[in-house]
Length: 475
Image (cartoon, rainbow, N blue to C red; front, side, top):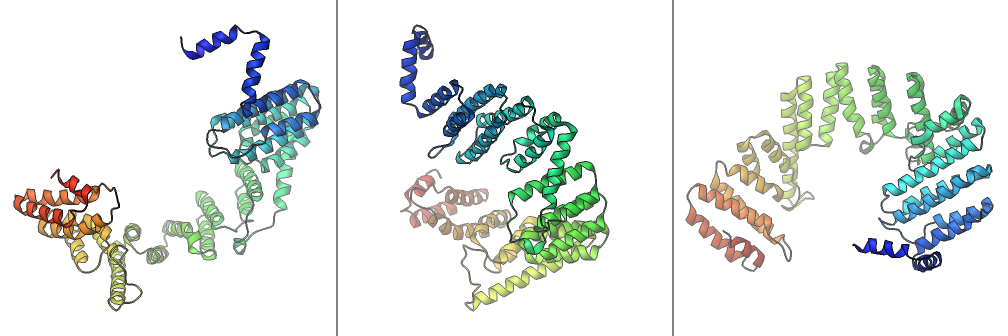
C-alpha cells in the first residue's frame, strides 16, 4: 500500500471535527489554501455583491513575485471565483455583470506577472468569460446593451479570449445586438484620426489596432474590396500598412494599384522599415513586365547588402529577367572595388584597417566562389589578401582535396588562433578537429613521418595546454 492510499484510509476514519482541525492546520501553513478558504467562507454567507466583490478582489490580486509554476494555484482561485459567481446568477442582480467584468480585467492583467501561463490558467480565464455570457443570458440584458458592451470589452481583451466565444455572444443577442455592436465599432473607427507616414513616430495604441482589426475584418468578410482599401488607407503610419495594401491589391488582380502602394511606402519610410516593400517591388515589376525597374531595384538592394547572400539573391533575379551574366559581372566588379578600397586604406593605416578576427571585404568573394564550387578561384582570392579567420578552416578543407600541403600550411596558421581563443577548462574540440584534419591529409599520402613531426611540434608549442595535450594523446 502506497503512502497516498494510507493517508486516504486514515482520513476516512476521522470524524468531522478532526478533519476540520487537520484542514485548519494545513490552511494556516499555506497562504494559497488560506485565501481560498477565506473567500469561500465569505461567499457561503451569501453577502451583498459589494462584500463578495471585496473578497474576490482580495483573493485574485497577486502578491509578490510569481514564477513559472505559480499560476496553477492562481488558476484554482479563479475557478473558485467562477463557481461562486455562477451561484449568484440566479439572484437576478444586473450588478453582477460589472463584478464579473472587473474580475476579468484583474485576472487578465495578473497573467503578465507569471513567467509562463499554463493551460490551467487559460482554461480558468475562459470559464470566467463563459460565466459573463451565461449571466447576460440569465439576466435578460437588452441585446443593444450587450452588443455595445461586447465591443468595449473586446478593446480591452489583452489575450484574445473573447474572439473564441464571440459567436456565442452574437447568437445570444441576435441581429439587433449585432447591429449595435457594429455601430459601436464603426463609430469608434470613424472617430480615429487619419495617419500618414509622417506620423510614424507617434505610438499607435493597442486600442486603435484593435478597432482597425475589427472593422477591417468585417469589411474583408463582406467582400467590399474598395471599402477595405479605403479603410486601410486611413492609417499609413507604418510601412507594413503599405505592404498590406499592396498585397491586397495584388491578390485581387489590381497590379497597378499594388505597385503604387508599394512605391509610395518604399519612398516614405527609411530602409530599415521598408525593405519588405523593396522585395515586393521586385516581384511586382517582374509581374508587370517592367524588367528595367526590376533590375534597378534589385541592383539598389544589392548595393546596400553587397555580399555573398546578396550576390546570389541578385543572380536569382537576373535569371528571371535574362540578365544573370551581366549582373554577375557587375556585382563582382562592385565587390572587387570595395576590396581594393579597403585594402588600400588599410595599407596606409586608414580607418578601414582590421584584424584577422573581424570581417574583410575579401570574405564575400571567398564565400561566393566557395558556394559556386570554384575551388581555384576561391583559393586565388584567399591568397590575394586578408580574409577573416572564420573562413580559414572551410578554405583549407576544400584546398586539401587537390593541394594537401597548402591545406596543411593553412591549418597550421589557423591553429594558434583556435587554441589561444580557448579559456580555462576548455576541451579544445575545434583545435583537435584541425589536428585530425592534418593527420588525415598526411595519412592519405602515406606521409606518417611528416605528421609525427608536425604533432611533436604542436605538442611542444602548446604543452602548457594540458587539456589539449590529453586530446592529442589519442592520436
